[in-house]
View 1 (cartoon, rainbow, N blue to C red):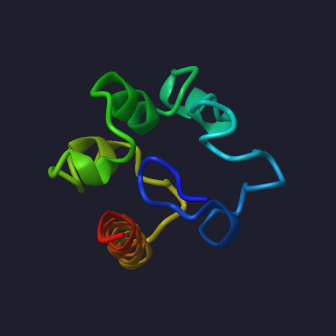
View 2: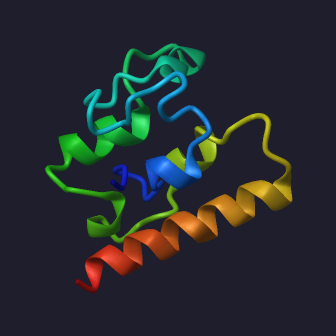
Length: 96
């Protein structure tokens, strides 16, 4: 299962099955959205508002929204690796 932003929940998300059942299953209403004073993930909400399946359909990823919702626990190196992984995942599903 891949989230709207390219995270593969089962392998890429430390909260999956611990704090969260998955972005898609929760329709973006993830617990950490409160960190941004939101009820839903801002990226998830953006994708849904644009009537896309994922950020990959937009063609602007990684956009400013990705940077503004950066995991505060990530170092610059870890964040760059996360973005590269998500872009790779989005590209892989778009080629199918």
